[in-house]
Structures are given as C-alpha cells and as structure tokens.
Length: 137
Image (cartoon, rainbow, N blue to C red):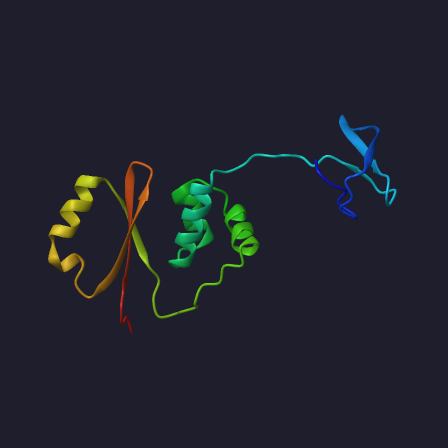
C-alpha cells in the first residue's frame, strides 16, 4: 500500500483489524481505510486476445466460450480500456478453431479465401481463423 485512497497522502498509521484485514488511518485527512483485496489476476495474454476478438465482432459470450474467461470480465475490460468497435449490421464474422495442419489445408483451397477477409490468431496450441465476407447484402 502506497497512499491514502482519499487524499493520496503517504502518512498513515495502523488503526486495528477489521474482518481479518489491517485497518489504517490517514494522518492528513483522518480517513480510515483497509488494504484492498488482490483477487485473481488473469494473464494479459487473455485480456489482449479477448479485446482483439471483440474488435473483430465476436460477442461477449462467444469470447467466453473460446477463451474460457467470463463474459462479464470481457465486458469490464472493454469498459476499462475504452474499446469501441465500429458497428455494422451487414456482417457477422464466423470463426473456426484449427490445428496447424488443418490451417495449412484450409489455405491450400483457393475458394476458402477468395472474396473474404481472413484473420488468423494464435490460441494456445491451436489457431483461430476469423472470416467475414466483404460485401454481404
């Protein structure tokens, strides 16, 4: 703990224990506070992947199913980092999870990539292929 959450002063004293957590009193503003809970930290890799998938047009629940991270966490990250994606009702991307061999076979077929945008991103030991048609009516 570095500073009082009320006035940011670094001068405080111990002031007892509440619910098994140390309580402090700020000498400058007399504000009482406790040390914040650390909680469970999620690897930044998953935060970046979730935001990337969100920008590609996947829904919160789709991201939850793919990454195994709560859709509420994804919503909180979008809000925290101020991510805004352009809205378009003309398309919704489709995605596939492929192994390296399946990905190679997919790209060997010209019809799979003709007339469409394709994004490939690493997802653990597999790859995620996100595809959308350019001018879907």
